[in-house]
Each structure stands twice: as C-alpha cells, then as structure tokens.
Amino acid sequence: MTETAGQRPYHHGNLRSAILDAAERQLRERGADQLSLRDLAREIGVSHAAPRRHFADRRALLDALAEAGFLRLGDALRTSLAEADDAFPARLHDAVLAFARFATENAALLELMNSAKHRPGASRIPEAAEAAFGQVFALIEEGQERGALEHGDPERIGIILYATVQGITTLVNGGMIAAERLDGLIATAVEQFLRGARPPLP
Amino acid sequence: MTETAGQRPYHHGNLRSAILDAAERQLRERGADQLSLRDLAREIGVSHAAPRRHFADRRALLDALAEAGFLRLGDALRTSLAEADDAFPARLHDAVLAFARFATENAALLELMNSAKHRPGASRIPEAAEAAFGQVFALIEEGQERGALEHGDPERIGIILYATVQGITTLVNGGMIAAERLDGLIATAVEQFLRGARPPLP
DNA sequence: CACGAATGTAGCCACTGGAAACAATGATGT
DNA sequence: ACATCATTGTTTCCAGTGGCTACATTCGTG
Image (cartoon, protein in one colour):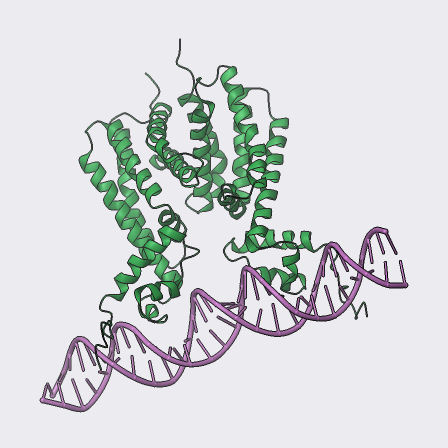
C-alpha cells in the first residue's frame, strides 16, 4: 500500500530540512529550552522517532541550527560590507549594525550560537563562527592600517566594541531597551569606540 | 513514631532555605535548564512533592533565586562603593569591577536574574533589580555633576557602559575571553568610556 | 488537650528524550 | 529484471520531569 487518501508517502522526502525549518520557528517562538523534538515531529506529521535518523540527539539538532546561524550571520556581514561606503567609520558602523540587527532579529538563535560555539566536540561550529567573525577582525585591522584606530593587539581593541554591541543587543532582547533605540545606540557605541580607541594625537 | 534510627524527623524544619541553598548549588553546577526539583528533593532527603509547599512552581523557585541574586548584587555594589576612593574615575571603576566580578562568579545566576527581571507578574524582582542598579545610575549622575561625563540623558550615556560590561562578562562566561583578562578589560572599558563620554573640551 | 493550619508523603498523569525492534522504501550490482 | 542491502520511518518501551490531588503527621493555639 502506498498512498492512503491525501497522506504523505512513507518517506517524507525532505525530513531533515523540514525539521530544521520547523525547529528554527520553534526556537524563535518558544526559545531553545522549550523546543521539543516530539512537537516538531507532530507538527511535520511524522512519528516522534523519525527525527532521530537525521539528528542523533536533541543537542545535535541545536548544533545544526547554530551552525546554520553562523553561516547566515556571515552572509549578512558580507552583504553589509559589500554595500558599505568606502570611509572606515561608515564601514565599521554598517558592519556593526548588520550584526546588531541579526542579533536582535534572531535573539534565541544567537544565544544558541554562543553557547554552542565552545562546546567540546562540535568542530564545525567554531569554524563557521570563525568564518563569520573573521570579517570583523579584518575590518578592525583595516582601521588600524588606515590610522583610524590605535595600534596594539587587534583583538584587545576590537573585543571591547564587540562586547559593547553584544551587550546592547542583549539589553534590547531582554526588553531593557526599546528596539527602536537600537540604531541610535549602535551609532553612539561606534562613535564612542572610535573616539576612545583612536590613536593619540601627535 | 518519631525518630527511626538517625532519620530526619517528619518535618525538616528549614526546608525552604535548604532548597534555596541546594538550588543555588545546582544552578552553579548544571545551569538553570538542568535544575531539577525532584533532584533537589532527593538530595535533601525529602519527598519529591515537599518543595511544592514552599515554591508553587519550578519558576517560583527560580524567581526566588533571582531575587536573592539581586539582593546580593546590591550588597556587592554597596560594599565596593563604600570602600572606593573619592575620585570619580576610581569610584566608577570599582563599582563596575564589582559588578563584573559578580557576573563572572555567578554566571548562571545572572542569566537567570536577567531573564526573570522582565517577566510579567514577578513584581518583587524588578524592585530588587532597581535597588541594585539604582546605585550605578546615581554614580553616573554624580560623574555628570562633577564634570567628568557629558550631560544628556544619564540612561543613554550609562547604558553604553553597562552594555559593554555586560558584553565583557558574557564573553568571559562563554569562554571567549580568559577570566584572567577580566580586570584588564574592565579597566580598558572604563577608560574608553570616560574618554568617549567626557564633555567636549571648552 | 482537641482541633485546625502547616508541612511532608504517596501515587497518579501527561509529557519528554532516548533506545531497540520492526516495516517500508530506495539504490545498487549482476 | 530482480534480489539484496542501506536508508528512512514506525512502534513500543523505559526512565526522568513537573504538576496535581488525596492522605498522613506534626505544630500551634484556643
């Protein structure tokens, strides 16, 4: 027997990506804690054990979501830098804003990405993260070469800005800052960073 | 029958605080997600339903932990300000460092505190949070009055620093920054903030 | 000292993630 | 063409969790 009424055939055909799509929606709507494998299976109309063929584990599914998130973040940064003005401050601002937008539009995902990044054994995730963040560190170095930022360990300089942006998005996501203020705060943060981290006047 | 061998009497006597203590340990060791009411009960040697008499809900227990956390954070800030030097930059630095230490030494607790703060219905938590953070906002205003910080909405000025510190502690907690670098980064962040947010030279 | 309020216990339910045994389908080699 | 094997889904079970209700014990107080 194959098709009973309008039922799905025995094989779903694209279960893996169907699960990933549904999972990302659940992640967005209910957060990572509340994401339920069985619920996903129900939603897709498949038995609760079917996802196991594609994700060994709940954590494996979350890791896959995190990896996909880093790829999307990398794309967002790439796009923003490709479209950006040539002046360094503008380029920095655009890249930072792109990150901040991603972070606020994908709050739960980003949280997942952060917690997954340094879990032992998930080698693909740090690679994907590196690919995304490498662009920003390269941008910092560009700023140093152009004389807009003081010299010194680029990571030490940049990490402060990264922390600031990460903090701002956390506050927005937590409701402590209205989302409408995001762009303004990012602009302020970048300006303060550029003032605070510029080379001493000659 | 009362005492069978070395058993605990029927009433524990201090179950509520025993639960809170055990819960904070579990929170520290396994994170909020993995904190299990039944596990706490087992650990304490009490039936799995006993905690219900003191905390209606898993969330109620977590809320109680969060509230206690804000009280302890407030104490830490108070202490650091009481012991601080008189100069504004030193005072700001000490308070910020006290917060950062609390945040890194109680990572899971702080996360819980942040997520609990803006949940509807938990009125005592925002109050406790306000009591703790009010000190820092007062300190910012003090800086403005002393001429060390530009004027304008104190919240807009201060939130950038708060975000930066929050970001730094998140990075430390996430393993992206070695804990040994915390003090140095906090110092850098405060310096950059003071340079970036000082009034324009006359 | 009796009786109601607190506090703890036992047992049930629904749900979850995980694992094993089984069934249907798809792919491959001859 | 077709037998065979790997893939993908299903069923069924288990242990663990949070929450609920009915019951037991103890404490306080009139």
